[in-house]
Each structure stands twice: as C-alpha cells, then as structure tokens.
Image (tube, rainbow, N blue to C red):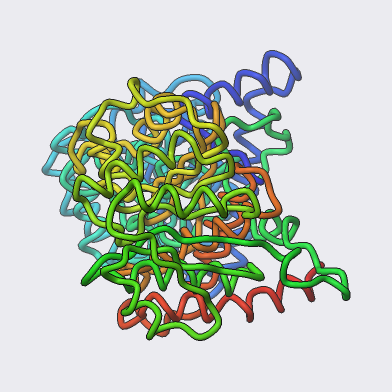
Length: 507
C-alpha cells in the first residue's frame, strides 16, 4: 500500500524531512525538480522543443524554477512565467528563481489582465507547458487573474504537466477552487499521492499520475493509503489440491423479492466466481419460484412470507455458514425491516450489509444501532450513505473521506463507500481503490461486489476481505469493460476467473 497524503500531511512530511531528518529544504526542492525534469524528458521527449514553465510566488513555483533550470542544463529551450509579484517569492523558491535569472532566462511577469495576450502567445509558441502555480498549497478561492490564467492554459490545447497537483484543486477533497482548474495531461506528484486526486471532479483534471520520490521515505504506518495490485495479490491464496466445496466457503444471500430477484442472483454469482464453494439464495416465498428458475449451480431456499417464518428457517442453518449477504432486492416492507434488524443484531457470523438492508437500517440514527453479534461489512453507495448519515448525496460526494469516517465511527464496522474510486474504512484506517471504469455504473454492479465480499469473508477478517473484494471487483470491471459503457454486472463476475489466473501467475 502507498501513503495517501492530505494537504496538511504533505506539509508535515516536509517538516519531518527538514527538522527531524535534517534534509535541507533546498535539497527537497532540487530532488522534486530533478525527478520532474527526468520524467518530462522520458515521457514527452517529442514535445521538448520549447517548454513553458509558469509558476506562482510560493514553493510550488520553486519546484517549477528547478525544472526550468534542469531542462536548460540539458539543452532544451525554456521560457519562464511568474504569475504575481517577484518580490513576494521567498525562501528556497527565491534561491532557485534567482539562479534561473542568473543563467540568462528571461522571466516574464503576469500581473494583470493586460498581460494575458502575451502569455497566450507564449503558449502558442511552446511545445509543452508545466504548471507550478499552486500544487497542494491552495486553500482558498482563485483570484480572477489566476482563474483567467488557468482558462488561457486550458484553452490553448497545449499539453500541460502539473507539479504535485493541478492548480485550482483542493488536495483534500478534490473540489475545484474556481470554475475551472488546470487540465493536466499528466500530474507529477511528490513523495505520495494526494487524497483529492482520486475524488471527483479533481480526478478528471489530473490525467496520468506519477509519484516521484524526494529521497525521503514517507512515515509509517499510513492512516490513509492507496491500494496496489500486490495488496490484492497478497490475499489471493492458492488452494490445496485436495480442497473440497465445503472448505471453499459457504455463503448465503438473503434477498430477492418480486421484481428484484436478479439482485440476489447477481450477488450469488459474485460469490461463486470469487470462489465460494456453496452458495444459497434464501428468498421470500413470493420470489422463490422466480429464483429457482434462474439457477443451476446455486441452491435456493424459501423463507416463507413473514419475518418470523424467515427467522425460524434461518436459525436452523446459520451455524454452518461462513458468511451471509443481507439485502440485495430484499424489499422495504415491514416484514423485511423485522428480518434485517434481527439478522443484523443476532446473526453469529460475518454479514455483508447492502442495498435494501442499509435503507431499512437507516430509519434510525447510526448512534442508536445495536451492537451486532459478529462483524459487519457495510457497502453503501452515496445515496445509501446519505440516508445512513441523514444527509444528502451531494454532501457525501463533496467530501467522501469525511463521510466515510462518520460511517465508520457511527457504526463501529468496516465500511465500503462505493463509487468512482471506492473507499474502505475500518477504525481510523482508510484505503482508496484507484481502479475501476465508468462502464461499471450499471445496475447490479454493487450486488456482485457484495457477493465477492462474502466469499472473501469466508477466509479473511472483515477489513482485509473488504479490501480484497473492492480491489478484485474494480480490476475485473476494468478488464471486462470494452468502452465507457455497455457493461452489464454479470460480466464483472465472469471476468474474475481471468483475474485469479493472472494473480496466481504473479505470485
């Protein structure tokens, strides 16, 4: 796993390097600019004819001045633009700006709107631009001049590489500080990725992300971390050659109602393709026949017509199960509510709580939820998360990290906040999944995930099962997607065996 920094943590990293380790700030800035210049020459070797570096008066500008000097030393033509007052440049950034000027590089100033036409002409002459305006340092709304500068860069169509973070983006939440931010073709971020990069709308502005070392390792452990493929691979364990289906995981899906039986089936299919040896769909009497006609490799069980009947049926079977999925297509009537509340509280085995079960539980505040008999993994999408938090979807999406923390603290359980770059939380730990495809925005995708999670719970503790399931689900979805649309949820499940083959070969 890789560390995932907030704006404050990025600053704390610099202080740790300088004050605790004794690494000079000038050296950190030199390392940043040197690594960035190397990346530019490697990735954009065909665009190095004339590089325009534009920076602000802060330390991110200093990184840009080092990039300009390094490129100049390699024989490339460089043009430098400072947005702001040169007298306000301080510290290490001032040292590097002065060095650049002493090398004979003309420093162009962009201080008022009248300077924008000249800046636009410079962009037209350049073959590549480098954004060193703000990086992670911005914590306020953009000024009209900064906004106009960013719009000019974006309008130029010139490929732009951002240093640390595209200017105009909040490093913590991923929101925009104005109407627009730099649309980078590539973002070269230092020491660690930043949280906001993987949240929307920022994720649409960062382009490809490359993490560059400053020569100082990030402190451990990481409270916020970015999943790597090896994290999924590490929890994929080859089976013993004599393993039988009873040892591979016994999973039940409690869900399905008339008109919604497909949700339960997809969850079961996800569990099967994730490796569960025995999967049973336990459903209301009214939908049992429909599910029975759909399945071949799964079993079905009628729960009767009432919660009391369902509880009586289930209590005779729960002891032999490894995990249970509660909620896909279950319904929202009073009988479903009684069943969900009983199983959430009393079931003595790990539960994946999804879909209708989350909606039914949201009728009471998280602080009033009873302590369950065993571990639970909650898998809300933003709408369900908003109901659980008695909030709105827009508020959840505005700061997904904060919403996840509230869900974890309120429930005391492992929580997966689904969406583009799903988040997983347990205790004070948060993990972010960097994979996925917009094609996965299809009905039933979350049902498949709940089944994968239940199959993983048969062998892994809840946090690791959630991490494994989210990562595998996203990787399989990427592999199955042929475009940004047209995927159906079943195809995500069907892509899992190919992923297992690849992970097995990689071990």
